Image (cartoon, rainbow, N blue to C red; front, side, top):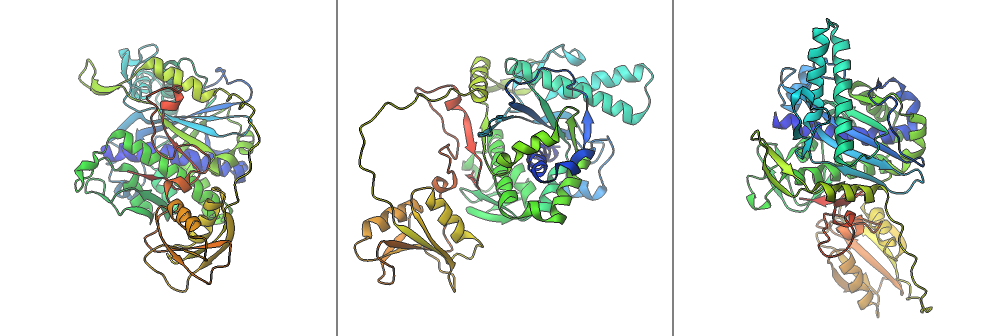
Amino acid sequence: MRRAVLATRTAVIVLSVVVLAVTGYAWAQLQGLNRSGALSGEQTSLDGDMNILLMGLDSRLDEQGNPLPKSMYAALHAGDQDNGGYNSNVLMLLHVPADGSQATSISIPRDDYVKFPGCPDEQCSGKIKQAYGLAFDQEHKKLVTQGITDRADLEQRSRDAGRKMEIDTVRQFLDGVPVDHFVEVTLASFFQVAQVVQPIKVCVKQPTQDSYSGANFRKGAQQINAKQAVAFVRQRRDNVHPSLNFTDLDRERRQQAFISSLSHQLNQSGTMTNPSKLQGLIDVAKQNIAIDSGLDLANLASQATNLSSGKIKFVTLPIDHFGKAPNGDAVNFVDKDKIQAMTKELLSPKQPEPPAPQQKQQAPAPKPSVDVVNANGRTGLAATVGQALSTKGYQRGEATNASSNRSSTVVEYPSGQSDAAKQLADTLGGAATKQDASVPAGQLRAVLGTAFQLPNSLQADDGAPSKSESNSSGGSAADSADSLSGGGVPCVK
């Protein structure tokens, strides 16, 4: 059951990114998506901004309530159609500004203890993920009592009740935040998308291994297949390195990092211009996604490019402490006022004050041009590093491949450039330096060895933090949010 939960949580994230990315290229082909009227006539955001609630169900059925293929159950190790339920094990509020600026995805931990509007199934409080399943069950029993017997009708009307209750619960929890649209997916989606897109690049900070999930990753960046991708996002412990002390929040960061990696790959690798892969993504979306009837895919297409190119910030709402609910369930207790203030600021950030006039200062000397030589063996690494260095003020030189690989990374420099070489070596995360008469005056040459890993400081080029940061003294509520920036391949636990 745990395995299914974790796969489901990631399915909604990945599929939502895929839908948002695909709409920018082939939105017309997505007209066959399942539509729901659960949001009809609801309040919407102002000024053209868009809030989309992403929900992932702990269900071993497809969007029509039908069993998955036996091969899918075998691949996921998640039981069969008799297992699972309708908890929303993934809840993410995606805020898309109308002006095309950076989008924000707010993850709501699934076990946050909240109140349910209307007390569905006579339960007034519980884990936020339970709102969907309680309302589904209540509506399903009511419809059966009314004599409704058609299985498809029962399924969709019960799901609509669950969708509405989950949305209302999130709204209430976040102090009335508008929810304009929703995207819902089921368990099968993640593995199917990973099969279409594989291999996928991820990065971990330490070697880690877990026999429960099948995770077995070395330190650094690496290419993984669909089966390994499931293990990457499911991992919740390390039985070889217990000091890593994995938690549920670490899984959320894994999921966010995977989204960033996937969206980066969709944008960089030509997936969206590959007819067979693009059709494969569209087919998965049609099979295992439901959206509200008011979501205009043509309008979404105009904003999707920013999302698929990495202009998105991932934030996880904080937990105050862990504890037990009155019924004995393990839950997350939260500071509701802090969360509501944080959400308000994330969705409507204050504009920074203009800087005070300063005396004109002499511009710093430009940084040298850097030729990057790939002696690592990973395709495209020289171009990636050259682009990353250009965001730090270096001039882009040539990006070439060495005739053979070497183990260590070296910055080569001409006479008189030792200080500049040392600075570049530090920027690259630590490298040796070596004077070389073949390097032209005023230039540097970075030779990337097989041990080279792109530092976090070069992966996040928008100024946002690339890993969890907290602000314990001063700053706004949103500053203390656990955040991760999209646009690359972040390294996580």
